[in-house]
Length: 472
Ligand SMILES: [Cu+2]
Image 1 (cartoon, rainbow, N blue to C red):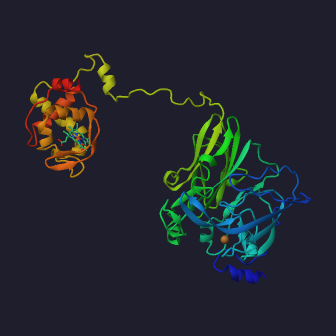
Image 2: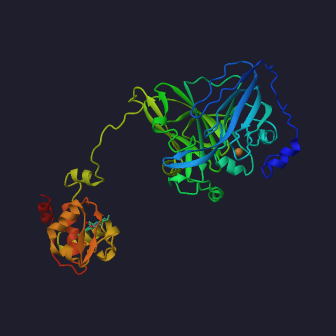
Image 3: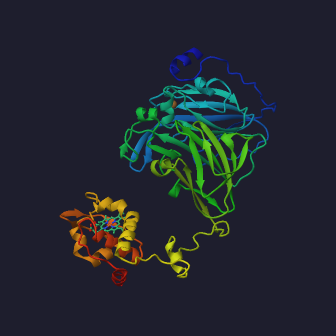
């Protein structure tokens, strides 16, 4: 029997040899009774196990291949553990004997199996659970090590089965339990590689080429864009403690998991139970790995879950939300307290007494030209270019400009107020936006005098008085 299984799984990385013995450090607690595991879809987590003894737990998990929404207007054929991505959350207790039944739906086109990282034994259960469409397999394992573990399909081509959505989490609750919290949620990150780009409408097939280069089109929490945002946001209340069981199905990327506006009071690093870090901003979750994060909600509002490799969040879908209801605590977070005008240097300098900060005023035309050149280089040249040459189709020329030379007051207004809409300069049309320049009357007079007296322009002078009267 075992030999046949080895042939069937072909190129999968699963080992075929070795006996499944796991008396490594089996606890000596006696098994009592038997129960069927409660399985849940994300973001729900099965209830806390309150038993203080190990039992035999029967897990029934079905693999199916379903066409579902991955983003608005976009479908994907997901391969699933339990009909959804991520797969069902499984919760057992340390020391339990897990009797695993893997059922592959008759409509499946592919054989599937399961490698649970919580299993001590070759392939994590993969070889023993290899199941053709319309078949069921059974194997059992002892949950020796507590912790939060990823499970996934390991049928060849392994990468493709994982890329199509075949992963989930199993929590082996430590026998002493985890500290009590008010809410627990299941969040799993993963990425998808589709023939079309992010958001391209219609049914998108898997792209092996993109998967090999590890540049996904979608990076998501709980299987699709928006699975944990808006109406699907995770609810909570002020004063509550929340625990997230976070997994990363990969297949390729490492997650920099972060909640905007929260600090993880505790992180069970890499999903283990011994090493607990405190006061963490961002925790790394490797592909095929996990973390448990706990935090207390001190104030109300929406808190955004992201992969802080941030283009994934805002451009590929890796966003989730926790909506916290209740009273805001203005000491914890005040909200915006004021909005005042900020004028770097200028405002403060102008308020200073004259003798403390004498204004640099041009005393004659040559000074005005000299100061004007400086204003031009600092404020205008980036767009209008050296020598006022301009840039075809984007920035009109100031050199030999019929538009500029025609009307000095209009030129002053353009600098003070900015300009947008179609204009014609030397027979060329421009339709851009020039932002208003925050300059003093003196600076405007200097820069315009400099421009008018150079580059083949009309040679008129502009005084600070001209600018002041144009302002009114
Ligand atoms: Cu599979």
